[in-house]
Image (cartoon, rainbow over all chains, first blue to last red; front, side):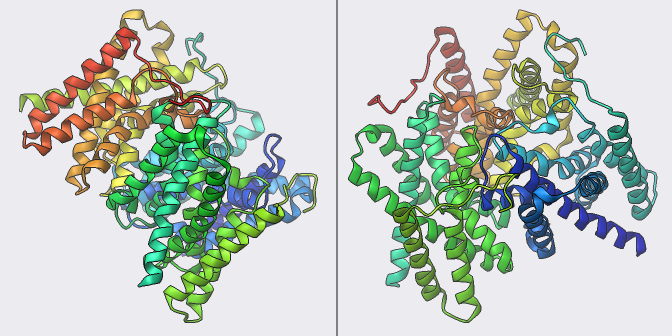
Length: 213
Length: 213
Length: 213
C-alpha cells in the first residue's frame, strides 16, 4: 500500500514535471512563437502523450488521461506554471525537474509495460509499449513542433533507460517476483541509470552511413 | 427537427470547405510540390482529421468519417474542387470559405463535445475533445506538411473560439438546457466571435521566454 | 493454401524490406544524426506503421503488429540488418529491396482493404484503408523525421499504385471472384504497375497554384 502510494505520487509529479518542461520548451523555441494554446497544448502533450499513444495502441477504451481527470488537471497545472512563472525558474527548480523527469521516465515505462501485460499482450510488445509510454510524450511534442523526435537522435541515454527499466520489470515478472517489488526494483534501477548517465555524460553514438557501427 | 437539419447542412458544408481550404493550401505551398495524392490527401485530412482524432481517442468504433461514407464524399469532393478550380477562385468564394469555416469551427467543437459526453467522458475531457475536433484537422494537415500546427502559434483567435463554443455548450448542458438549444446558442456565439475576431484583428500573444506574460 | 502461404511470405518479406529500407534511410539522413534508437525506431515504423494506422482506425483491438509477435521480430530483424550491414549493401541487394517493396506495396494495400471489409466497412473506406496500409508506414516515418510525407509530393507512382491494387481487389470481390483469386490478380497487377512505373520513370505531376492541372 505504501509503495503503491509512492508510485502514484511519482506518477502525478512526473506528469506535472513533464507538462512544465514541455511548456518551458515551447516558450524557449527559437523558431516558433507559441501562444497560450501552444504552450498549454505542447506542455500537456509532453506530459500525457506517451500514455495516450499507449492506450490508443492497446485499445481498451479511452486513454487513462481522459478517463481520470486528475491527469488532465496535473498536466494543465504544470503547463500553467510554465506559462506564468517560466522565466523565473531558478537553477534549483530546474535540477528538481530533471530528477522528477528521471523518476517519471522509469515509472512511466514500467506502468506502460504493466498495462500492456494486463491487456494480454506478450513480453516484446509490452517492452515496446513501456518505452513508448515513457518517451512518446516528448516525441509527440517534438513532432508537433515540426521536428524529428530528439529521442531518435544521438545524445543522452533516454529511450534506452526506459527500455531497460521495462525489461527489468518484465524479467522480474517472468521469474515470479510480485508486481510491487518488480516495480520498485525496475523503477529505481532506471532512475539511477538515468541520473548516472546525466552525471557522467553517457551518450549514444550517432550512426552515419559511413560508419560501420 | 429543423435545427438538426441546419446543423447537418453546416456539418457537411464545413467538411467541404475544410477540404477545399486544405487542398488550396497544399497547392499554394512554397516549400513542397504536392501532387494529386498530396492535394487530395491533405485536403481530406484537413476536413476529417479532427473528427478522426476525436473518434480514435473516444474509442467507440471506427471514426464516423469511415462509417458514414457521405463524409468521405464531401471531403473528396471539396478537395477535388480545390484540385481543379483552385487557381480560379474569386475573392467572393474565398470570403464564403472563411464564413463557412467559422461556422464549422464552432459546430465541430460542439459536435465533438457532444460525442465525448455521450461516450461517458466528463466535462473537461469533453471540452478538450470538442476543441480537438474543431482544430485537429488543420493541425494534422500542418504536421503532415512538415510544420508545427499554426493553431499553436500566436495569431488569430481560433482554438480559443472552439474551446469557448464547447464550454458554452457544456455550461448550457450543465444547467439543464436541451441539447438542441444549447447547440444553437454555443455554435452561433462561437461563429460570431470568430467573425468579430477576424473583423477586428483580435490576436493571441506569442509567449516568449523573456516575456512575463 | 499454396497461394495463402505465398502471400504470407511476401507479407513478412515486405515487413523486413520495409524495416531495412527505413533503417537505411535513417542512417543516410543528411539532416539528423540518428542513433540506435532512431535507426531501429524509424525502421520499425516504416515497416509496421501502415498496418498500425489501419488497425487504429478500424478499432477491432490492438494492432496486428502487437498481437502477432512475428511482425515485430521481422521489423526489428530488418532494421538490425540495416544497422549493422547498411553501408555494405551492394547494388544487387538494393535492387532486391526495390522489388520486395513493390510486391509488398500491393500486398499491403490488398491486405488492408481485406481487413477493412472484414470489419464491416464499405468499399470507399476499404480502398482508402488499403492505400493507407501500404503507404502509411513510409509516411509516418517521414513525419517522425520532421518532413512532409514523400508520398504527397510529385514523383514516382506509389500511393496511386496501392490505390489501384486495392481498387482491383474490391472490384473483383464485388463481382463475386473469390478472395484468393482477387488477391492474386490485384497484387500481381499492382506489382507489375509499380515495376513498369520505375522502369519507364512514370511520374505524378506537381500541382502548383499557377497551374490549371
